Length: 374
Image (cartoon, rainbow, N blue to C red; front, side, top):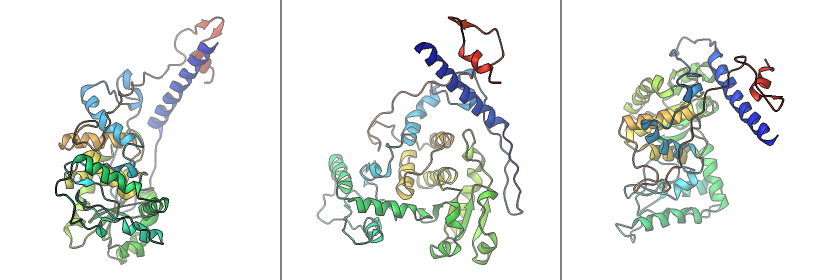
């Protein structure tokens, strides 16, 4: 009975995967298309491919996918690039710990940020900002890797609960700076034109379509240029493949202006805009894919890049651009631990109504029992 129950539970899981794939392929969206938007046709990947990767899953047994897995794992596993862990991790290449949010310049290994006991959360967060960090004249010019790691860990050890809370508050005050010319935001924050003007935003890029549209008329009055791209936040959607070129060109347009700044947003500022700013930052700065994601999470917090397809796309882009960097567990990588073995691919979903129902000890097979649900 226990064996039969376990088998039924497995079949039920596969049935759920199957229904999700069918729903993904059969869903149709109808959007009202404003006149000043860009619409790109797309094909949502669903229950396609070989039997080993039904519903658009990745077969990590393939060589190229297997090489990507350690990087995908590092991005996907919540604790690996947690911003608090990132702060205590020395930046590869001798640059010391990654600095806290507030400035995109990386502090040198010699700079040890002073954690002050300010009264307000804002003052505490500002004290941790690298803009307020000055190199220590007594620091050794070439500290060892162990010294860098210890210095990085000491930052967290010296941070009180109030300090960490202040950092989290700062990360939630969208738009947040990713580079001096590119900010990450959600839809709600970019509707506050006064806030955008205060932060010097000159361009707004909406990658979530009409449902996240901002006040275009107010943007025009504030001389803020606006571009809207209709993209989906769902597994199988090729965000970078379809929209990176156009979005990067728009951000570059803002960058070319004197003091130009572009705020990139979707609905929540997590997936669509998250993968876009990570990709642009990675390509513009030449940072490795893990350093790029670590930097963005440092600025935005851990609510960043959860969509599995987008994670895989970002790693694939890094490979094509020669920006994978050292593999997790290898020397020079900010992730000290090697990735576990990749997950086995999902098998094909169960088929219902085909073949003769087989009984086991007089009871119907789980697949046959599920078939009666239709």
